[in-house]
Length: 242
Image (cartoon, rainbow, N blue to C red; front, side, top):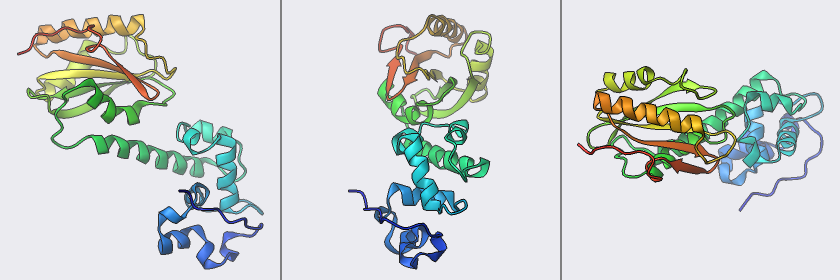
């Protein structure tokens, strides 16, 4: 249940009753008593001219289409909203806060001794980090012999193709970590869950390289929006169990 936002007149927040100022209100009553606008106003910190921080926050949410759409925006998107008083510093602060939300969602699904048992578990861990991004991110997840996650690393950012994502780049980190197997994962900013021809070709290349190095590619997962596609689940990856 959302807290009800008070209908306040145009006054600087410093002139409000202390009990109604967002920061003081949070300290006294806790975050659950604050509206989305009030929480965002704390991040915004200051207003512009006769607009208080709450006015600026309200305009950000209105122009972005709400919190669920704001969280999908990047730095340039925030600036493009054209909200008076929102410059580089405020845009960076908002994006940083949204990124913390994504990372928290990812960490909630990942523990220090996480053993991967299914593609769904991989999507739960990495989906929050990769969905809604405006560029493709290709990562490799490094696994121990019992499928415990050792580490993960970003191989490329931008357009995914074989000239950028090479076996050398993918398996170098696996060799350094003494990984027993790897899982490939990348996102589709378009939201399309279907693997492209390039995705399929690249996966075949990595699977063959993995066989030659005795480091099998167990899966290649595509994150698109709130969904995902698993090459292994579709029978597009075959490997011999050790």
